[in-house]
Image (cartoon, rainbow, N blue to C red):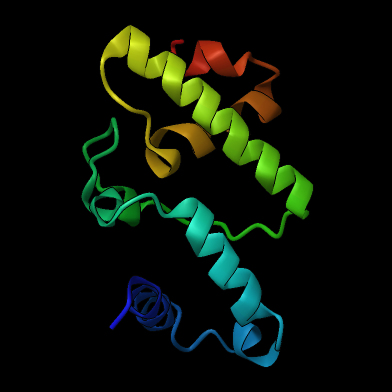
Length: 118
């Protein structure tokens, strides 16, 4: 089975019983697009956060973003990730590091680079 098929199966199992998503015919397509941008690798589920719990154990939020914003979010991640790799010798992870920092920056008016220590 392909990676996309495996991801779809995992998402279906994870959200099984969520009737609201099943009734919306556009949800599958949007969820598929979202899973491409938010899932970095299969290892991301087992990555431990700063508090010692796995990222997959955190509450999740599905956001429906306009394509232009999603693209800009990905581009900025790539830029910040490159800077972070140069400074710290390791990559950022989207789900563990980047997405929470973007939300925190928006909610607190802090600079994203300061939050990510770049």
